Image 1 (cartoon, rainbow, N blue to C red):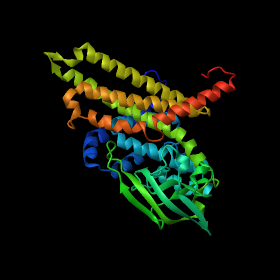
Image 2 (cartoon, rainbow, N blue to C red):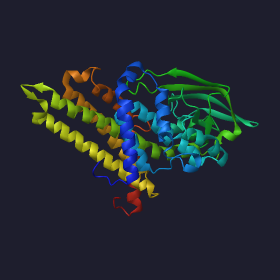
Image 3 (cartoon, helix red, strand yellow):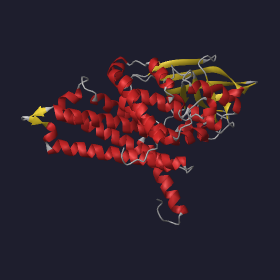
Image 4 (cartoon, rainbow, N blue to C red):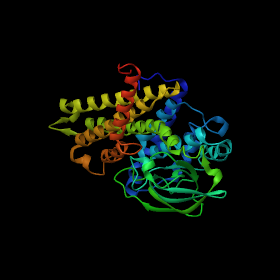
Length: 394
């Protein structure tokens, strides 16, 4: 952390999150993983500490903190339990930010205070069984019927969809023809009490097992017209813009998971003895630790460079994709090295590193796969180079 210049407030937020994670999250993380158990008490605790309203302005009962403070807290939470971090990230980065940035005054007043207090948990429904990376091909249809919209379709991979009270959902409002791409997709605020709203398949996942992931079926789901967010037809634009912020959150999660694996490895190296001495004395193991620490520091530095640019109001699409790509691939690499350091013990559930490796994998997939990030980075870099008369951007 020494490379970052943190304000007093940022240091206090970091300490608060670290103390909470070490005290409340780490001791039960393995148990929650084995039982695939979502802990609602954890949400209440984080809400009481203000973590569910970190990016919501004070006028809506949030803390109104900057992006770097939020990411520092998110990393610490991920060190304690990656499932808590994914809940925190989804809630803060996507539904609350979309309502704040694109909703109307009535929507902000209705939803944001209760989301900041943790009374309502937010979720995000963009992907579908046949529309993942190609979000523009989604087919969920919304048809206007008087003072309601009627939605039909299936949403997939909705994090904590069965625990959320506010779900931002993308649906087509012009035609079901997916060839139209992003045109005609709108955003709606769904709540589980709506007629025609059905929670269905719960995924049995490899990692993040204490964070439920659901399918949602909308069967003639009647949504009041005042639940449309922003302009009709602009929904996917809003969603993709919010993903710039969301990807920074995933990068912070990944750094936290990698750090948990590094810290566990460092402790184990001093305790585990082979050939009459601690394995920390073997140069081959030291080199693994050195590479792990270096990559984590590089990932964190890239993440906070992107966050600082965002705070300055700069366009961060390229940097957020870089941070997400590098941090998540770092997490996967570091956790794999941690399992190797533990040897056979790393492969059993008695030790945490196998869980860290399972949790790390999905960070390379959700909110844009590594392949999608490379496409975004290349496209943005080429565009910047062309705008600068052929010279590569900083």
